[in-house]
Image 1 (cartoon, rainbow over the protein chains, first blue to last red):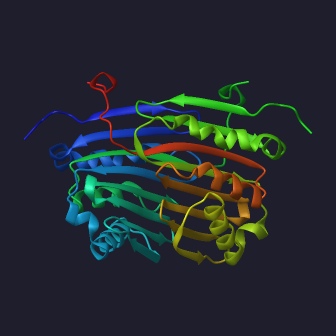
Image 2 (image 1 turned 60 degrees about the vertical axis):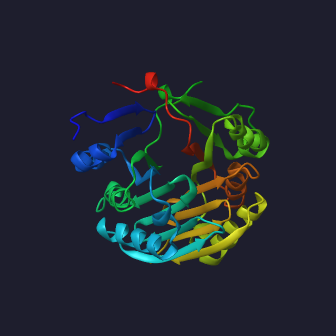
Image 3 (image 1 turned 180 degrees about the vertical axis):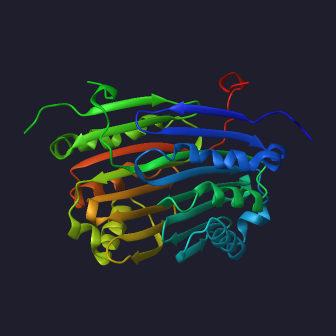
Length: 169
Length: 169
């Protein structure tokens, strides 16, 4: 077991803060709760939604190429985060790969898989303050047994105007 | 008519460049092609996909609250960019608002609308190098008559490893 802390990079933008989180599987097992709850630090930004874009690397081919399993994982991830599932649609590509979306009352989850590369692109977009998109992201990272995850949170629908001094003239 | 150039902010990140584009309706009419084609400048980054996250402000209530219209706009936007539509699903919320997704062979388009705020969150995620996500984004911005748009491009599935020197120790 490694005690090495995760490499966490914080970057500031004009109106929102991005967080890029890098960790390996061992670190994920040890401290995933803290990592994934880090997103709450941005709660004071006046936006309509939170959007986590996650890159899941090192997943197994089998986990990423079974449409029914991927659909099941996505719906469970939504429910695990406390979301209300409204619609879902999944599509299997030939020779491999799955694309799918779960529309929730709070916005959506999407996934696109490249089984041959062990890679999945996951998005979790939530509006309101009742659920945390990082919870669904954490659930998917674990159930897909990703070896390496990079994730970024974006704020969507920022209603407060950007201060003039922060914009190039 | 205003000749004021758009305020364009470029930011660098470790593995990709974000572009935040701000412009009003008049500027959009004049120079939208140049603005939206700006995304091609990132073409040399070794990634599987390109993801444009766009915030459309100042749209009419009617344009954002009609599920069939929104669905039609989204599918047309996908086709206008040269994408191949595979699946779509849309959901109407009460008392207002629409959420929907179009799964394309190249990944997806999503939309969530807040008609009461004149706001829509649009995502266009494309893989491969045959289509440009900014084309679909431009199409939607125009057809929804957005008065103000902020958009950011993210790269998805970056396969080249991040250099050690670029990661905090």
